[in-house]
Image (cartoon, rainbow, N blue to C red; front, side, top):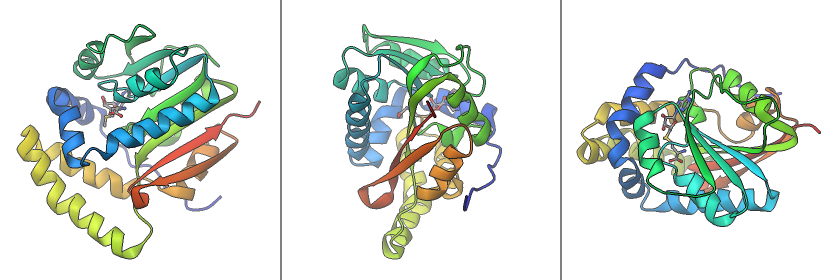
Length: 236
Ligand SMILES: C[S@@+](CC[C@H](N)C(=O)[O-])C[C@H]1O[C@@H](n2cnc3c(N)ncnc32)[C@H](O)[C@@H]1O
C-alpha cells in the first residue's frame, strides 16, 4: 500500500454550520463555480451505478439530493435512502419529491443501519468533509452487503503540472471570492479549497478505500483530474 494520507480531523460543528448557512444556494453555487460540470459528473456516477443494478442504495452526505435524483432517474427501480447530518440541506432534498427515495438525518460516522443493508453506497463531495476518513469508510463498508459496491465522487488534483498550477490558482484565489459573493460565506469556501489539497487523489484514494473494508477498486479521473470517481467492491 502506498501514499495513504493520515486524515486531518475535519470539525463536524464547523461543517454542519457551514452547510446550514449555504443550503438554500448550494446547488446554484455549485453549478456556477463548475460551469455546470458537476451535473455531468453526477450523471456519470448515476450511469455507473445503474450498471451495478442495485435494489437498495444509500446516498450518504446526500445534502440537497442532487446525486440521489440523478441516480433515481437512471435507476427507477432502485430504493434510495438519502442521509445527511444537516437538516437544512435535507429540507431542500425533500422538495424533490422522489417517490423511490426516503430522507434521513444521520451522521455518516455512525449510521442507524444494520450490517450489509445496501447493495450500493454512494457519497459525492461528502467523505472529504468527514471527521475521520478511515472510520467513515469502515462504516460505509459495514452497511454495504458482501459483493456490494461503494462509489465515491469527489474533487481531486490534476496530475498534469500545468493544469494543477492553474487549478490551484482557481481554487485558492478565485473560488473563495466568487463563492463568497454568491453565498456570503467565504470562509466555507476557503475551507473547501483547503480540504481539496489534503484529500487523497487517484491511487492514494483507492488505497485508503481498500485499506478500510473494501477489496478491489478503480479510479476514474474526470475533467483532467479535477474530480474523480472511485468504485470499490466489498469482498463477497
Ligand atoms: C458538499 S455537500 C455534498 C452534497 C451532495 N452529495 C452533492 O453531491 O451535492 C457535503 C454534504 O456532506 C454532509 N456531511 C458532512 N459530514 C457529514 C457526516 N459526518 N454525516 C452526514 N453528512 C455529512 C454535509 O452536511 C453536506 O450536506
